[in-house]
Image (cartoon, rainbow over all chains, first blue to last red; front, side, top):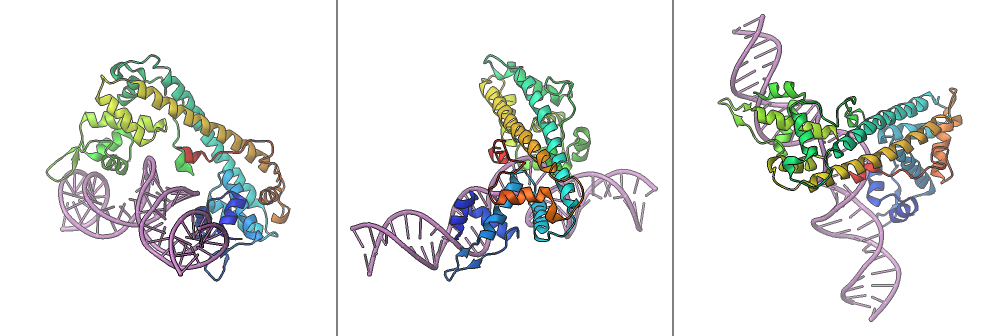
Amino acid sequence: MRIGELSKATGVDVETIRYYEKAQLLSAPTRSDNGYRTYTQAHLERLAFIRHCRALDIPLADVQRLLSFVDSPQSDCGEIDLLIDAQLAKVRARLASMQALERQLVALRGQCSAPHSASECGILHELVAAAHGEACACHRGTKEVQAWSKSG
Amino acid sequence: MRIGELSKATGVDVETIRYYEKAQLLSAPTRSDNGYRTYTQAHLERLAFIRHCRALDIPLADVQRLLSFVDSPQSDCGEIDLLIDAQLAKVRARLASMQALERQLVALRGQCSAPHSASECGILHELVAAAHGEACACHRGTKEVQAWSKSG
DNA sequence: GCTTGACCCTGTAGCCACTCCAGGGATTTT
DNA sequence: AAAATCCCTGGAGTGGCTACAGGGTCAAGC
């Protein structure tokens, strides 16, 4: 199977497949005489595994750990549990941030209804008010939103 | 005010402040004889505005647009509304993805309870099953999760 | 044989919003 | 005088791709 075929079979971009090889998530396939990569069924399955994990937003470093368990079936799976638990905790933390964020934006959006000049715009007023440390509609009564992207 | 004082006053990292200057979100302050940046109250307010927008996960490019409205109060605010609406739509899309993700991870986590070898691990089995295109506990009956990071 | 187009290769740069570091200079505190 | 703290610039690194530039390879059609 050439890279284009693997790409079509899995729906993964050709460039992404090459990226996974460079990142050592996918073992380097054999090359045909012209230098083209030639993949096997095993590669396809491994790639599908990776994409499934990525659909669960599991970072590539953790995917690599999971793959090492696939390769050594007799090892203890405790770490797998921990990894999934950690992923779940991360997702839940983000979820909470996102929900707070939505509430804040809805409140902010409510400040502006009819079209008018920027100087009269409730949204802008709210954002400027925040610059003065005043209470603002969007952040009033809500917990501070964590920068969840850091925790990834 | 020197950069360290501004940093303490706003809670924004010194490096981040310099980054905002380079990204032209914060106007370059005057320099004292020794070359140190000297900030005014206006800089502090602008920085607080930026951070408030970032707390709402508004991208820096959009923050820049909002700042341009702050600077020209007589312009029409229609675009502000659109911008906040777009941000809200983005957050809601992410929220939906995150919720699906949580359900999937909970289902996946349920596959493994007691410690055992990796070869018997339900989680790993599920993930491998996905590689065969089979129905898996985590993605069974749920809509496909979008890679929301692309839509940002 | 020659062109067209689809496919493949390597290597590098860009995205976002920072964050960190090296290697230096200035200032303040002990 | 030494040590600690602050400040400067410029560049590299993060994650997970994505998008080139600048080539080579191959099958089909004229």
